[in-house]
Length: 179
Image (cartoon, rainbow, N blue to C red; front, side, top):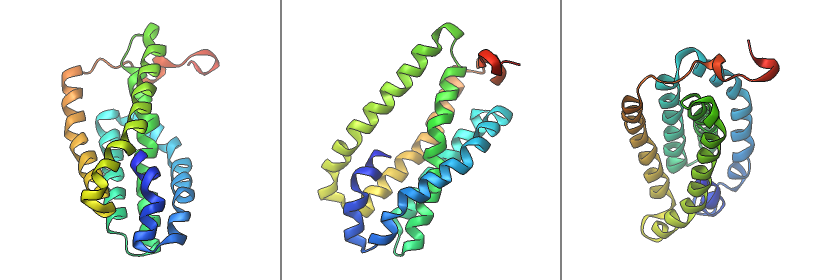
């Protein structure tokens, strides 16, 4: 996602879609706000094995749509898909990380999750920016989409290694929300 944030406004000059790209983050935010409550319920009901790959698929579709966008509505559609994908992967990934550790390690799991998220946000623009002169914006967004697609089977393989040791959704609840 850091590659989108870093390069979107430069990309808009290349594709001549300034108005749509200026509304990109508004559509992204609306998509996230409307779907996060539902995605959390889906995670509790069906588990990470189904929900996270679905969100990663939406994220990849959004990156592909952005790479091929030739109109304002296509850019906004990509924002919708990226919100459905990445916007939900953030919270669902954290929930799954917390669910997979003993209660006494929840703070450590949360901190580790956000440290690696911040490392990705910091290194992403630097690494993708070094490829930009060779690839251009469209190919760079295609590469990002392919990288997200590779994450889907990699995540499935990681779950296979970790096994079904996750605690249930209600076991992690604290305080007045505990049932």
